[in-house]
Length: 145
Image (cartoon, rainbow, N blue to C red; front, side, top):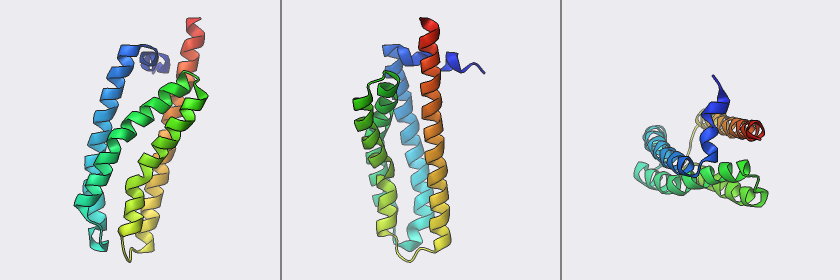
């Protein structure tokens, strides 16, 4: 698979807008699915599924925007902006998880370990995807010159 072709859209303004809309849809769909799973696993430990869903869904909208902006500013080599967008992305990404840790009571260690492993795996996946997008974009810019 030619990664150059996949990420060429990152240089077109209209394609970026479309990409952000698609990313928002995917993040919101993930939020719904994740909320169902979290509510099922953590309800017996005092977590309100409705409150968790509200926190997750509401934070997902700005998360989708900030994560997209952090990637695009990084690709555009706007390092100062990238830092701020990245920090906002991290805070919004982990906000629902902080609620789980703060509210849940008497959670078995094995549940927290599983939760932590999933969080680390998803974080690593996100970083890998972000890095791949950047490397491909840099190669595309060099090839275009």
